Image (tube, rainbow, N blue to C red):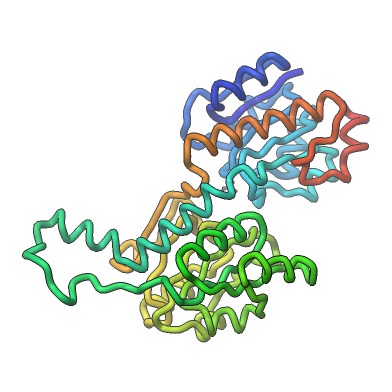
Amino acid sequence: MKVFVTGKLSQKAFDALQNFAQVDAYESDDPMPREEVEARLEGKDALVCILGDKIDAELFKKRPQLKLVANVAVGYDNINVSDANDAGVLITNTPGVLDNATADLAFALLLAAARRIVEADTYVRRGEWKGWKRELMLGAELNGKTLGIVGMGRIGKAVAKRARAFGLNIIYTRKADDKKTDDELKKTFDAKRVSLHDLCKQADFISINCPLREETRHLIGKAEFALTQPHCVLVNTSRGAVIDEEALVEALEQGKIASCGLDVFEREPNVPERLMKMPNVVLAPHIGSATKETRAAMDELAVKGLLEAFSGKLPANAVNPDVWKKFSARK
Ligand code: GLV
């Protein structure tokens, strides 16, 4: 069988893939132009791709031999799953292995924004530091405050674990109505489930950790920023479009929140000029899972799922397991 990879895999993952299939891989670590993906996919049975690659019906139509797409990311909003179902294409993602790295980054951004680390760094480098001052770079303390976690899944829980060590009280929202999970979260983190409305009103800090779906697009917008406290610090390590970016910029300009730390944006890699100019905003280029350990684990999980699927075993990381029968018949 033949596989195309739209970038570089870690050696271990690449070797495992090559032992199993004929592998063609994009030579660069830069995002791959769509037309080139299409061209190189000719005659390939499977694709290993990243979150910048848009996968939809148009691609499936042009490349009918394609049977599996392994997305090396936990979020798969770059893939039209309904189109994949129609085409009988199995989709896999990389859940679980990036929870700690992403939660670490959420906390790095939260601390950086709350304690004004980037501003402070710039101040020192510019030679503006003249000595200790009582009111220099005063920020917000975490201990005893309330963190609102929007989306209490695997990554949300990893954020909660860190939050407890920082002395934060936790409130959260989650999609599924599930009393058992709420009870467990109460027991483990003393966390309380609330409505999004109450979370926005009560939280001193907010961390966005839900996936981007149709129902979470612009989940945080003008109406929510009308509820937030002016000292609130917002952090997003999920997907940019969960927040209405225009409303976020306005909220910052109008002091409806104090600051934010963003790893993700609505139109990556474009970052609004107005955000770039704000000293109270910490920006990162979508690096939530970017540790050596996690990136290797993501590659390995992606390859493992692909090998399993083509060996006749439904992988645990299949996003659309319902397509398994159709996939198996096409294999
Ligand atoms: C990264 O953003 C991911 O979804 O894995």
